[in-house]
Length: 240
Image (cartoon, rainbow, N blue to C red; front, top):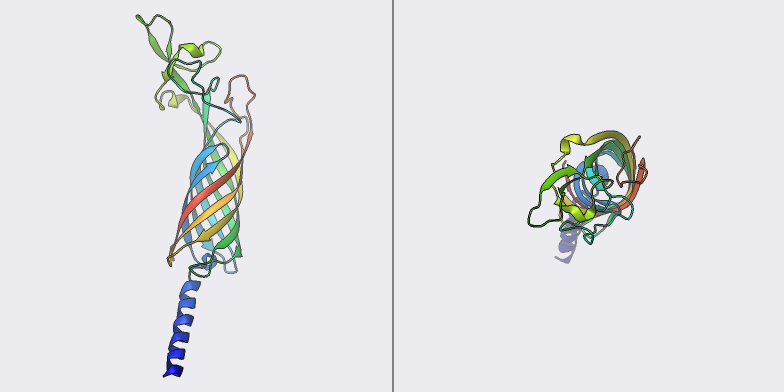
């Protein structure tokens, strides 16, 4: 009886180990969705991963992120009602696609283990410079006040006469679009309690290059290169 029970238990262990091994991402197609916080703002990204015949894999990447200028801060002390960055005339947004590879360092081969992988991707992007529009008062007489919507120009608009920021889509048709290049390198830690679902934390750095960049902060020279450190919470699922 004891011998029979031992072989039954051994069979269950082997069976479970085989089942847990399915959780290793190195040999499975999987997709991820991530929410990113970086040193210049925030973003979201999507990845579709395809294994190679040998260990590792390659993936397709798509993402969005906004980009703040270095040390920019919202200020309301000089304004009537709005909180905005003084002298900031454009908002900058990146839309990215790319190709990358993933190189496993430690496998996630059971429910309680954590996988570690090195990743990189590169590809084209669209850099969109959206002009900032404001609601502006041309008079300080509160009994008879006229307000206009205009593109913010610090050379002619006094901060004290800015009533508020306008709606986001004001001036969207005047946005300028540049084609650039992005590069990302990172480490991803994966864990999960289910056979097909997993979570992860990805951390690393981004580099964005934009030829002939536009001005973000009035009187500051345009920048062509933006770099960021980031951390991303990812939610993934094995799809094969």
